[in-house]
Image 1 (cartoon, one colour):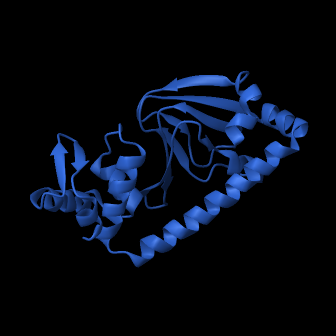
Image 2: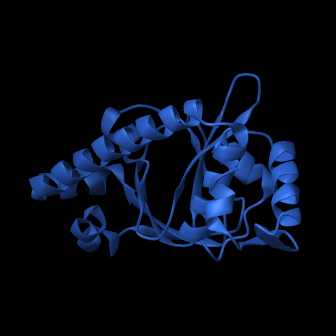
Length: 200
């Protein structure tokens, strides 16, 4: 909804092409507007004080990001990075303010998205606490693979998204391959039996 409401503003926004692993903004940077993914995918990461990196979520085509920090007038709470070759559009602070002033419906749409995102984050955090490491990895593999099927997900990325380590992911994937649950294709993998994967 927010994408459609912003369409007239997007035609005047800055477009930027990114390579895989290219940073868009760092945690702690001043929020300077709102971003949309035109193509490709963007990952949201948090780095703790001890240097541990946590993969929080993925933004696909037509997804909006950076809006929560912008509305709260806070610095960005996490770092964003292109997970694939990606094209993004950046709407400056001035353009966002102008668009919101012209369309109160736009502000309501953004606030509704913030509320939905917070609800989804709470559910995901509760789920991570209640599940075993293998269950978290299995669900993350299924989600990432089916939501973004053309992306080759690294063991590190799956580990960060599932709240585990890349070593745990590698062991679990090797076990799944030996059981005929998945099939590896180089760095990529194919899920052969969804139910068995989720039952581990």
